[in-house]
Image (cartoon, rainbow over all chains, first blue to last red; front, top):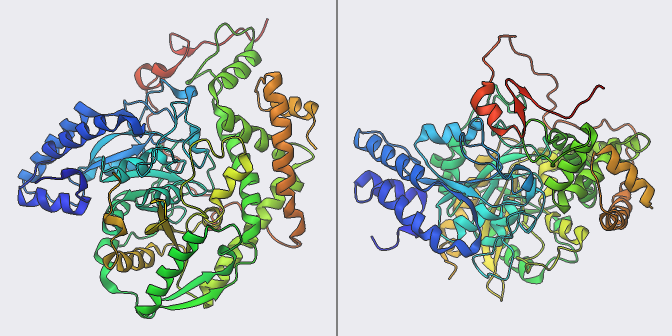
Length: 485
Length: 95
């Protein structure tokens, strides 16, 4: 076997089944690769010895006859998800030395499946950002071009999978933080329906929007990882008790007769012409395969960015109030009193974007502004959700559109202009506001060789249709097999 | 729209200490961002119920069965910036 790094999780599992590869051999090879790709800055922590030990354990389980799609397969974890006994920094100075006191539920599920926890990936501080430039530990490079961002906030996970360091990774998606980096790095990324995966052990950013989801290099791998981490969890009362289908076994049902809604508000001025071209070509392909295209109207789309940048900072300002320098996290030296301890610990611990969002959130929740900003945004959120309910109830089975308005942008290009940075999430945040599943898959490249993503959006709990449609496309295109040099 | 005074008030509510440079930067940025999000005023929300949970779930009940807490020694206290025995140590609060 010459190129272990390029194997998908499904291929790895079948090699392990045949006995032609061991998880230890694979894990060792990928750890070496991770070391040689340090320059990407995709990882904040590599589990090295611990990963090799669990690889050995997985090999033992296989030898004893156990089988499973993730048994012995390395998975990288965004550094906002707790792995007991290891550091979870959230890309922040605030938590630079924080040791996870317990396992997140998704991590417990991964352990049970026999997946090899590979390491923790770099991210925008507390998942706030669209480029992974907001990490206290330095920006992540896009494997396709080191001068470009990998997207964010889960940029480290996306870069790790795209650069063939790990076959699979977990991210979190509050306004596009899985799908946008998947699009920028040419891989598959999925945000499940709100409530599909447990948030227990995910450090909270905006609790009504956050979901954990998979990154993969194939749709089938994505389905396997999603199946493994999904399901109701008594420890997260916002997770829902809904059956988890065997998506990976339902991929081949085809797309004939599917009605694909094309929202006209997602093909707007400012959409990069090469992105539009690639997405339109994908739509045509679907039509040629027997799906029908229906133009649909989502009239409140334009309100989504404003709604998000009121609600998410509001929830963040509340969630991040827990960082007080008392029980965990950074504490300022020699505080004069308790207020001084709070203020200086927080100001020293948090970075620029986190402080900016805490300030916005505090403002829109403050007395005199609550009704005008927060309450109004919650009402507009209902209107945005109604738009989707309406088209899904009668006009289409899923929606298709660009994941992001442009391919990846240059490192440094947007750091001084928060509003322009926020605009790169304009097509993904509606999906979080409405709680729907969304998937990004590679559908082309720009003339400067940067990946372009197609976003599929589904009805609540209907991840199956998205995976099936993505799988059909992937079977007849080779974008996902291209490797960054 | 957002004055230096407003910024100082918000920062104090958020328990943040800002440098003068940060204050003027945030005053300008918050003004732009808040001006942008005021586009929501152009949508009619008359009679619309605010949405806080997408699936309409409200309270979720369970049996009130005690389960063990994380032990202070070990998992919990290991992250404490300052502690004394079984307690987190903070500056003097009551004279």
